[in-house]
Amino acid sequence: MSQRNPPPTPRAVITEIRSHAQFRRLNRFAHVHWGETADPTDLRLNFFDTPSYAVSVFLGARRVSLLFVFIRNVSVGSGALRLAGIGGVVTHRQHRHAGHASRLLEATHAFLRGRVDLILLCTDVRRLGRFYGQVGYTALGKPYYYTDALGRERATWGGMIVQLRRTRPSAQALKPGYRLHVGRSNF
Ligand SMILES: CC(C)(COP(=O)(O)OP(=O)(O)OC[C@H]1O[C@@H](n2cnc3c(N)ncnc32)[C@H](O)[C@@H]1OP(=O)(O)O)[C@@H](O)C(=O)NCCC(=O)NCCS
Image (tube, rainbow, N blue to C red; front, side, top):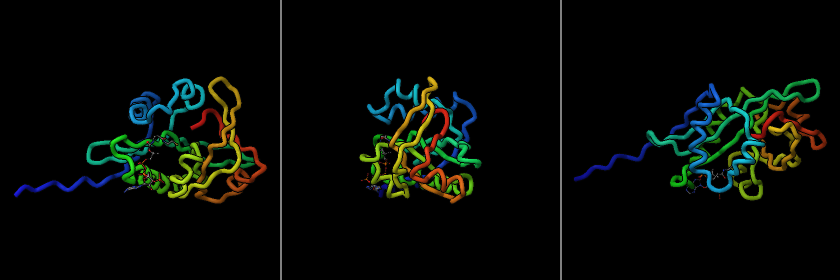
């Protein structure tokens, strides 16, 4: 009688990023599995920061899902907002719709709880708003701003957030009339 090995249990792994070269190596996974949406010019101009952490989901030795976390202190009024920007969320093409990205985001939120006030990601809210909503995100409901690689201020309406800690800066940052600028590079 043949015995099959049980499928490996997905496990989340958090990696501190120590150099841009390490980030580029990890980011190859995103380039392979992202698809046509990643425009190299857009990436160079608008997504050029080095993340603080990578979060991966592995099935055995195989990475099946990946994202990057950009930790920033953002001035809001006289205070500082502890912000985590989430970027590059991607799942291996052959492992989609199995809950890996949801698992990835939940592991990321658990890691960030107590470390930051606010999580912000940039997405196509019409296409992926429902997916991110299932793991706790709500639309920012206003544009947020960043500075691109040429020093120009850019705005995006793609913001979705999870507020982990209500502080005076995080409450102010989320006010409809407050102009939230997250610094150099989108994520
Ligand atoms: C978006 C993306 C990251 C989702 O990855 P994923 O691992 O397939 O995500 P999940 O499996 O957690 O959830 C995806 C969907 O599968 C559903 N799902 C979750 N677990 C499931 C399971 N066990 N069986 C079937 N469906 C499942 C979820 O409800 C979700 O449905 P919805 O999109 O209709 O809301 C992936 O499609 C991708 O890499 N896309 C290209 C890159 C991209 O666009 N990234 C987003 C940038 S902001």
